Length: 168
Image (cartoon, rainbow, N blue to C red; front, side, top):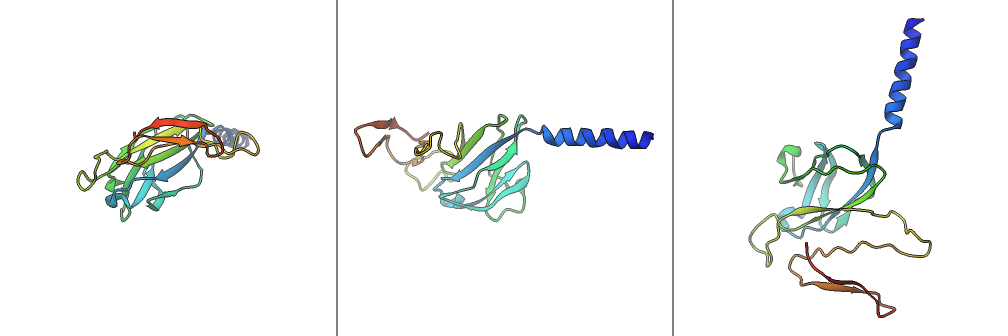
């Protein structure tokens, strides 16, 4: 009888553990124009998340652990493991939040007009669907390291949506 009670309690505990695991949703966008980062591998907690992730591509939204510090590493596309990382960021994501992570900047210090270091910008409040039916929700990010400030205008009217946004 004690063995049956133990197994029942263990089953309830494991079910609770998996039921209450906190997650966030993330999407990665590769926007680093540096030729040294044309193809990268992305590791989440030392496990390959995106293999051979190409410049100017985006991942689908995926689940990621929330409420704990993460290890997000970027390595060359031919990496053998996360030990080959050239960049690391350690965000802690909020449970039930949706994020967009944008990789920008240059790894190499030479050959580019603007020397902006490689970094990953983390944007909370991302949407996987528009908040209002019939509308499109957007996140504006200036990702051209050698471009001046820009405006984003709504083309069917005179509205300026974003004024003088600059590269991070």
